[in-house]
Image 1 (cartoon, rainbow, N blue to C red):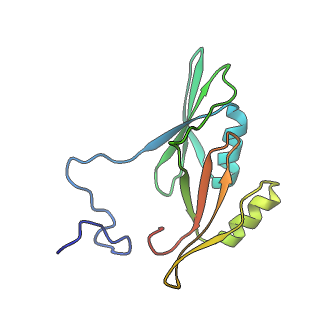
Image 2: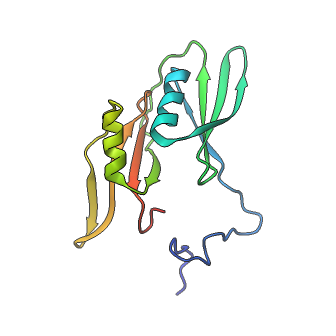
Length: 150
């Protein structure tokens, strides 16, 4: 039986897109302090502001990862300083070439990443990663590039 799952290591599947299917472009999170959140995503992940829409009661700021083209839309509702995440939010994830270097860089920025963990199955390393929280408490996973995580 043929699998419908694309092989992330296959060059043939890399640019494959089913005709008529949508392309993922961004995810949105609500933030309590726009400047603090922008600084975090720019310093920690190198995202760059590409678009901003300011209105009387809210602002939308798009920060892009130029490697993938995906963006995080920061939504700042003026006058709202904090949000609850409920039980539905999980995490966003970024991949890096050198996990240890990224971890130490964040420590140098006086941030508090959680300890590096290894995810194994039957003794085989599947992933190395750590989590960090942004200024609004959103969890972000940082993974070592490899295997499925490209």
